[in-house]
Length: 300
Image (cartoon, one colour):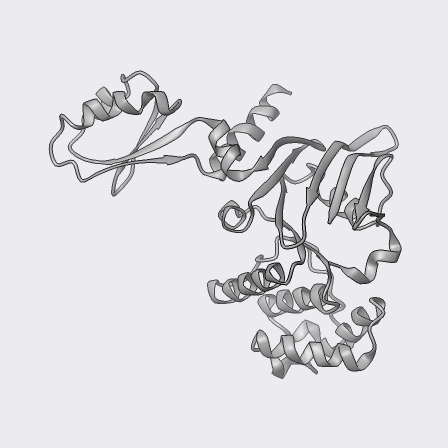
């Protein structure tokens, strides 16, 4: 288990992370989100023991996290950090030995993952000779070669096509089933919704959204009603609780302030002709993120 307890980290007088707390259990994929500069990378470094917090503590299975835990942690950073003038094998031998692995085990696991990602022919190729997508695969393998208990993934799907994204997804799910702890960060919030049960959203180093995604959506209150019918859009906008009407190519999306206004919209729609759809859905995580984070920035 990973516990982050009231962590604060300062660079001089600048507070990069403030009063941050969360817990990640084995077998959990935890979403850590935020805009660029919100404090995600600093938080990653703190929970891996690369930076010591100014206040608070990070516990890795009830022990203060530190450099002694490096062999049990894997980290895939957003920017590619590969040594491009050496071969795939040489690179993974280097990274594996940094994790205290012997060469035989590194080679065994490298062969397994190269085969899994359908790139066995690149084992003795220079990194710079690989496509961006295949370099992303090698970077991913470098993060998991040591079979870590804690895996930190920052934008893991960057540069991948749908087929390879699916391979990454299956791998992450495999690690979850094995009881690994996974910290997942992505600007593609549909992936976050599909992976994570709990999230923390940072803005200026502070958590402005936190908790189970289902509860976050419930607390947001705003809903969308998708409708297919012969509607008067101008009249729709006058119904109490309606704050936005979107005319999509295949349906009308009506944004309402809360579930208390569903009946009012329904009463109008049932009087219309050719009604084939009336579906109420919660706000997407992307919608919540934009409103909450954007709202915080407008306050500045």
